[in-house]
Length: 112
Image (cartoon, rainbow, N blue to C red; front, side, top):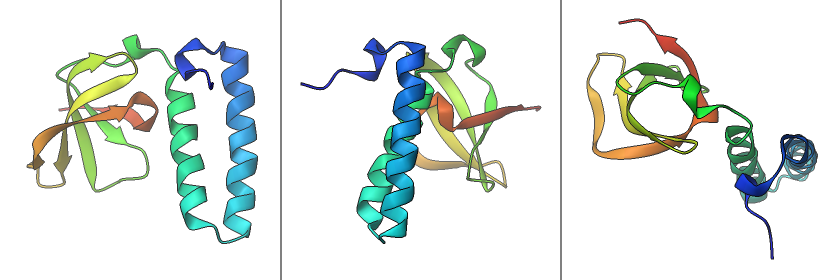
């Protein structure tokens, strides 16, 4: 049975990210798109557990890594997940439902 990332030590998480990065590289070279996407998501999750959730504040807006067209407004934090809404370039909320992003997907705080 696999362990949860929340049970890993920081060193184990670093090792896991390195192994997954290698698997991602190989999947990309072999054209295995689905496998590549799975490893990328696992990397994002492992990196989230390497970060401090206290570095992120509710009712603040953050950049989303890899998505320059949107920012993310955090309503509240739950572990390594930020719950809130994406905001497009015009300042409008995208979608009607709240979503959760791993904190490793968030970049710098946006000044408002």
